[in-house]
Image 1: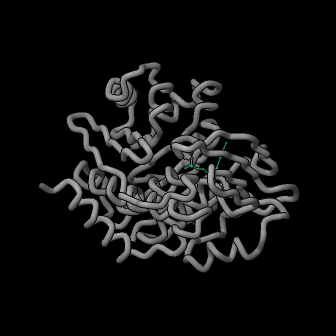
Image 2: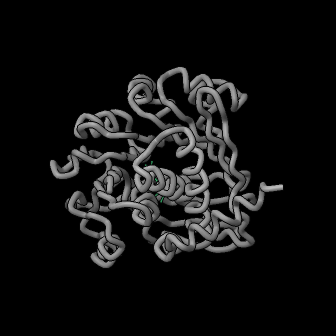
Length: 300
Ligand code: AMP
């Protein structure tokens, strides 16, 4: 079975929605991603934590079968993010980011992880994404996430990493910003021309679109009556997406399209609870049941 490597943040989040607030809950892009992807294939996690990171939380990854030998513990504070959602639950407003030990961290991919076939470069400085890529040998597929800050401040490194990855996974605002184009279709086309084989545009409750050279594919979001915390939806999506590729060992166009359904379903587990709890409780039979619901949504 191929292996999945993820490099990204491990965090404590403080999340506010119009209805609830939770402080100090386990978050971070790599947490959401790995708890989704481990449903599909063995996951290797590379991240950094401070001395305040609870052993119990590290244990949650281990219990989920994730290889945590790439987690580095450093003296200092763990990454902390304080975010707030408006009534539409669409995009998070970042109130505060405290980078802590994540700030000057240069990830080192353990030698035993260098043969990973599927790689997710979670949201981090694109210079670091490039360094990570230089430490893996011959991946079958690499996917990348990013955010507005890097698009504004690290353009040339981001352009370079874009040339080296297969899949770019971003939200609507980011795809527009990345291509400097308002129309999402044109923006995706523009990014495809820079190197990646596929661009995924996540549109929250409206679903996700996958753009490839000669075809696009649109999956509706999984219908949920209660969304409690949208945090981590994008990373859980990436976990289901890459997870499906790893489980099948393929990255052809048809597999990429089906992987969008897995991403969509994993995102639904992430958002129906605060923190990673929903993702942690998810099972593969549960995922498959939700995939059938999704398919029925668009079958005439
Ligand atoms: P998502 O909602 O999929 O964009 O992911 C949100 C998660 O990413 C939260 O759990 C945060 O801890 C983490 N996060 C927020 N800002 C950053 C950042 N600047 N760099 C890395 N991770 C972040």
